Length: 407
Ligand SMILES: *Cc1c(COP(=O)(O)O)cnc(C)c1O
Image 1 (spheres, rainbow, N blue to C red):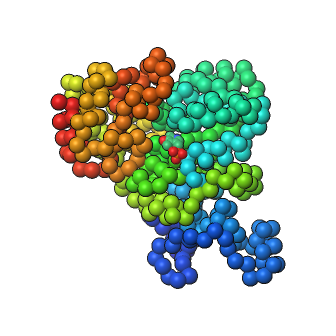
Image 2: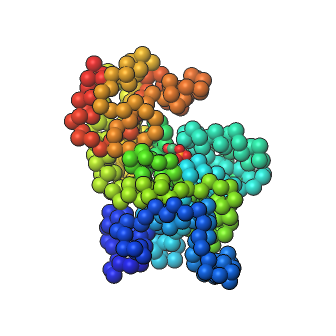
Image 3: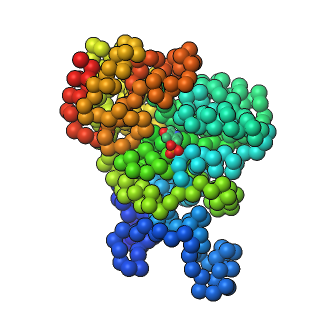
């Protein structure tokens, strides 16, 4: 944005122009810098770069111009119109990673140590939950899992255990699309000096900006809506303590080695340019699909934040621009759900989310196959539940496909 003569006023313009550095060869787009290492004019220059006294690239695990553009775009979007505590526009630093899970690993290993605990929500992305339940305890870091929508329960847990260092949450969350109150929970966490980290993958910065509420870190699986086309796995960690991001977190990122690559970064940059128009269409399609499903005789229940039947509808109105593109719906049992999935003609049978095309999955036979039925059902993942990432096709075609698949 530095090269623009006037401040850009719209999110969509920032998504298109921010982060771009003019290219020496006058290429319109930042090329894919497929180079693992970078040259020094002489030994002194090498030393200056290593000391950080001269700006410049050294080695692509540490950074690369194509990756920098994606990082700066994400910082600009997460910080768009957001003020810091001193009322100045907030400054953010983003580090791109090989995957969402790599970004989460850097976050957790960069901020926590043995003996620390994480307070988190019971409905997390499966990989995040497994990392906290199966890998971190071996390093002496444990997670306390509660319903973070219950602020009294959160306060009681924080007061009871002084080794809690971080509140970690995802909103909206899989697969019943629960929504945690970012403002209230961050206020509570900050009274107790806790780190607050938010997985903003489902919402994207267009729909929700957690830094508005004073959180410390935002993390993304860029694989989903930010890329938007299902062409690359990626992750991003965004922080507002620039000093901490540039030192401790950068060190942990470089040493754990979950670096992104320039090709995937290029795809991500192109995807993010259309984030605003894609999300508007994703969300308006999702509301029409949710309304159609809630009026359908075969459908027992629809979980969509835009319907006032959703228990977290009011929370979503407070903190999200639109209610998102993710929904789930319940049919009468396992066979009905499998039949619906099998009958799809245009919509795609696949896990993941956030692509142009509509994706449907059946958690009980796919993502949550290994989870015992009683435990699944406690979280609302019944045999008949179908999860849907509503795409940006013409909505009549999505509705027609669902209509014939449900017959
Ligand atoms: C996909 C996803 C992740 C993990 O990201 P990867 O890019 O697959 O490593 C984390 N959180 C949420 C909400 C996700 O949807």
